[in-house]
Length: 380
Image (cartoon, rainbow, N blue to C red; front, side, top):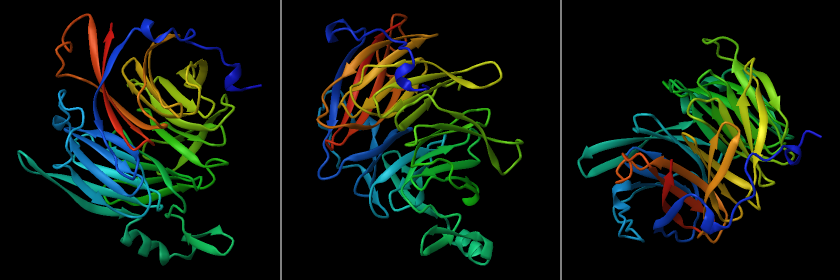
């Protein structure tokens, strides 16, 4: 059977905590009130978070001082839009645009303006689909599709929660996936919807990842990962290139290495499958990372380090060289499932330029309503 349980482990059984190779400490806890953090992303000097009660908050990273375990939120930039949770966030490479995906089936675009050295503001630019795009489609009868037994709408609309977003390498295209099982492609110059792939999966789509070669990876509760590609570089349409079927439970998270040659996928059974690019360009599952006791909910990659957040309330840090992986650290402290994470090298650390260690900062959002900031010291 092609199931994740039959994939051999790339990591040995986890050692006792005192024998793990990484050292870590929680340097700050950002307390939530009545809502949990459903998404987060690093955008330049900001940590941008989305909450379960429609709030988007920009917090200056400089406010997360080492000697302040509960930083003040007095200077945060906060906006609220739509209804329900902010399901996903992405930022442009210049950190001036933030794009948010929402439970109310909408996508919203925000601009961060630098007003002065200590003053920024966030402005709402657009809601997708845009009014002009919707008006254009309404004039074309073929644009309307059946979404429920007694309901029709234009094909540019998502009709369920928008679960994940991704920008193309050149940032000319925005991709969105939804629990409505569609994959949509938007042009970022005017945010017009260029394409919608209906029934891209047989169940809700939970995650998306893009590679530099134009391949689009989508992961679903139907246990499959699908690979899509434009037939030509200037083509507006995508076609199904491959279906990866080694998971035996729903797939909740995806992450690609910086060189896009290794794909990680997190399943509801607690396993992380490792896929590598083989001859011919096809991704093959070469092994699994096991250690979490419950579903993988989020993944992130920083060079050779893999970070995984789980419903078991922990975050694990993995390092891989070839097909040999080890768990370097287990971060414990959350009282609920870890819903979202973001990691980055700490370039300001005293160890950043040394030859024997590296330092990472990890931000984790949990259903316990807290965001924790972790400093992780790892030997080379």
